[in-house]
Length: 223
Image (cartoon, rainbow, N blue to C red; front, side, top):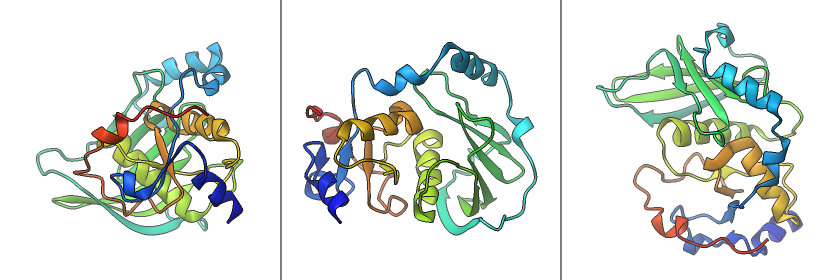
């Protein structure tokens, strides 16, 4: 309770009444983010190498693992624009953090600094929608809830595949009393698209027709 209160009391907090999503947000925007200093020339060379790959080397047919997160998350799909096989998102901008591939009903999410996919989502394609039925996750080093991992997959699909502005879930390791650390974590994990975070459930937030212009036009407050 004290930690969430610290986030709410931060100068970077946006109250629900000011948010087009109807939930409180944390403003993660930051010029010259310190996370950029973590990216070495070796990392950048690996990124350039992966940009040439179709991602098929990461495909391994899987059934739900003992740690699979069973879910039912729907996304619209236009009949004339089906989800194709192969790379769905390959970052061209240096501040985009994720590669996304699709092979035989498996969406694979690879953070550009990782050796293997952090998330593998099994999808079913219908005529007018895509349904995520379960997620196998392999993210290590952080203790996060099942809701957080499902929220990340939901966020990556909306932000990277649909190119929609949505807030990302707040990692459990975020230090509420240190706004700069939250901004750094946000950029490290979500790249330039991770502009705002929330501790609320992100999966059920409105997102397709939300007008975010007033939110994006706000000037970030000092840390």
